[in-house]
Length: 356
Image (cartoon, rainbow, N blue to C red; front, side, top):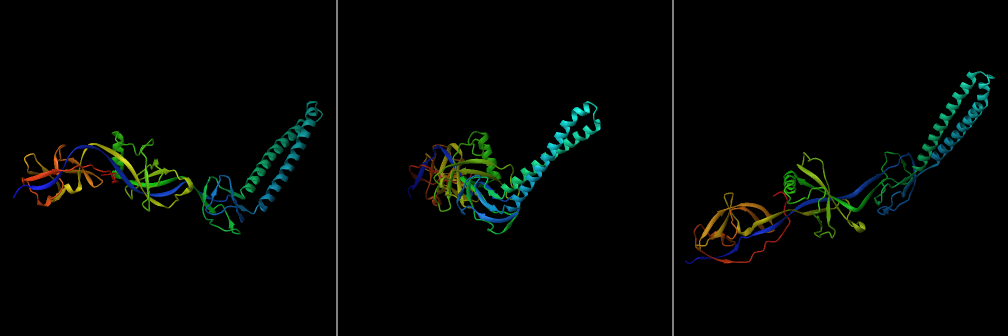
């Protein structure tokens, strides 16, 4: 029999951008629980659930009558304190020259000076009570401290609420945050790439764009970026949490959604890439079949690197320029004659786990 016809590719060094993929959970960029600062009966809800609200907008109102009465009482007590202070000032002003002229005892003036100091202190205390009463009255109007989308009301008009009650939540959704976890091995690999200048994905000044693929398979039009990497590894999951931010015009994305984050993790320069069909496994050892210049098959043990689309990056075992056989592997053996037909091969990018 003549040489077996096989297809082969020429191994050439090429730059291979490797991409990582992680499952992400969407959340508001800022999430605020709206709670009252005073207790009372809820008398009004001033927003529509699910609508956008502005910072400072009144969302709920609590019955203000009790707090208005407390303010009126505090203002009355302030007026009494000021009257006492004015009387003390008159007494001191009248008796000071008399004490200097020895017309009255010095001890009488000393008592009046003490009464004036007490009156001034009482005025300051009353003024603080008035300010506190004004704050309590103002807090009967429960406002949003951020701009965003307000959620469903957690309590109804007519209920008695307290500072422990959660009335609703407001989330800033533009931009929106996406949280995902990077395994310990992936994290070490990414920090190593950053140290060697191959990638700066996890650095604070990372310029590498992130792609978000939604749960329906669509790619989100806006690109994202890393916001922060958590301070510690989760001991239970062996992963570290990473937060990314994506612009969200129109508030299309909502907290609780899931998606997949894609990002370029490194670039392998002059990497040898072969199709998956060219790699065979024998007792745990990966092998490729090379078509030698002598027209015979030569088996080479290889060390596989990361997967790249439907291809493998070869760490060792395939020199540049070698002809790698891509079909009929089951029929080949060391030294078998072959007639290799070289075909064009252009490796294509795909999303792969970053830690490989």
